[in-house]
Length: 328
Image (cartoon, rainbow, N blue to C red; front, top):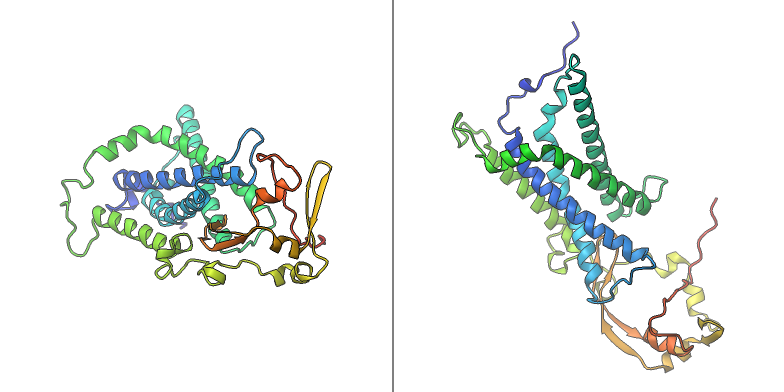
């Protein structure tokens, strides 16, 4: 005889229920909200719309926003797993086949939840893979991650709107019932204990990875994908040798071409070294979540622009020495 599917009543653990799911969902929603807003900032920094002037001060702005983006996404991983576990019995709710109107509502709710869960898992999985520079796919990570972010946040808002009455009741009511006793006995984990374990798991995940952004945590962030090894503690994603620019950057014929309109200036390395040099401690931050603050020395960009009488508010286009390999 083929075994029948379980029903929600088949799951007897007191750890599951709206009281636990709502409290975890609250913090999961906060993490997704922070990741979404900081993700929009990151996208605007890389593809700045013509109507927007992206601020250059404070200099640590992108370091903070992208660091929060990755940290919030990392914290969301154990929160999402705990949330899915707490609501898993809902998957086996029976459909009201004899009530068409109720059936339509159930199908719509299940469909929206399926979209939300799928988008959430996709965002967290691809985000972690990007932090590790592992791309086992052929699509553009940045464009796809950005597009699915809107799907995730939209479906999250719909889910919150539908579940708001139940969430409000669960959050304002007691966490533990009168029966069985509030405190767990015989080695059982209480709801409070389960929530504390979830918060601890999220905290450990953050501490284990946040060192890529927060230098003070590097010694405890054992899973940070960037250790800070490199000149002045700057992680090296790709060396000049790997990029194939060692020869072109060091040869005597190297020239830096600066142009504005019909004005052009060609500068050799000696010309650049003869110009006033400025040193400043400035952060370098990567979309992958790591950042560092080394000392940079060289000619100010605005002094180079002044050589061709470019206005101070000009957009600057920089062309790298690296040449992309021809596509197969």
